[in-house]
Image (cartoon, rainbow, N blue to C red; front, side, top):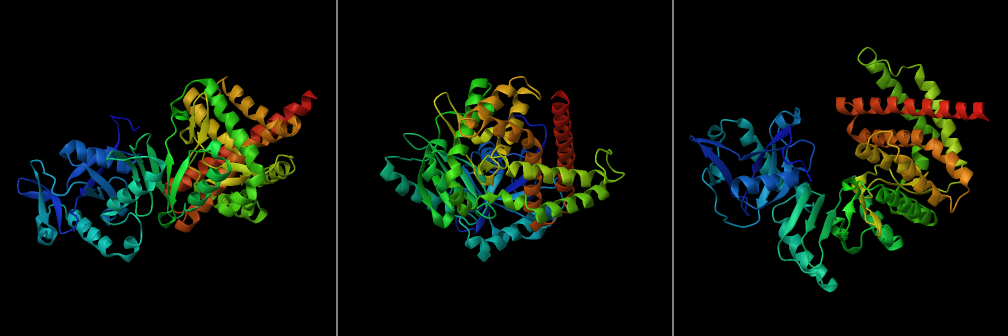
Length: 467
């Protein structure tokens, strides 16, 4: 859960309309009008915090709908942002300082901050936008439709729901809500572009590898949505017992080994094909972008990476890709962004969640991503990491020759960084690469890739000198 006393917060003003969107809630102080404002932690779940703060400040239960963009909100992180939330109870009493006002009566002159009126205009435009009308969650009243569907969908499974829920994320086509159903909670998740593949992949995993994923109850294709049972275990990011980390890594290997035979079905369901990310044209494109980013950074950052480094890095990456392809380890299920929050584990079982970044390819890269979470939990270079890795590799050695497993593991750290950087680049290209935050991040990945390639080269040299 989010930290209760964050040090950095964002300012959000909430647009709270009635069902017909003819009135909204206004904050009035000293004859000045404004939209109600809350502060929430940066870089955390906006919907969860907005709903909680509106309830805490004004005793209003709301569901988050969509953010509203204004000209000011496009200029940076320091400005006030706006979000539409809908009251769950019609005609709920308002505390002192808040009152309902007709939207038609709210002229620009009534607001000291002109962006409040701009946000209202933007909100009204979204209501009439055909794009939002055609999305599952971009309009008022969608939660009532979801609630009715939920009750009907869970009845055949002997589940019941009265009213309790927690909303975690909200957008016009994406939703994540935990419903307090009985006999156990259910999670509702819906996905939109560019992650619609997760809907198909989740169904494929539930059908073929049900012991490794949460139990899937029902789907709603119209929304790319599904309901899954909550796992009665703890998230791995809350766990310090090394044995449970070993269980998680061993279970990951078992899932991947089982998935090798069904790789084709997962590709057809939408999993990323790492053969595409690792193809020569795509590798060439990556290093062309890397050259541009490195040129742009000359004189502005520490000289950890130079243009002269890139040809050798590219040659070494291509060498490692060939070695991985010829390793004897089959292509299998992987996850390009696996972290400890995606694993739910107990002494009896372990399941994995959130498969939007599923891939088919060299499987060992996935453990490298999970080990990033391990390092944050236990410290870098923790002596316990070796046993977590051994649990994974030993599981693989039951289905592949030990020497193939061990040699393939040596190339995985560098290839994991490269694959992740490739995926970030391809995901960002449709939106342009001009964001300073993104380009700085990609440069950091390039520096990390260089370090991993150097480490691999030195380890191989050391092995040869000892032989």
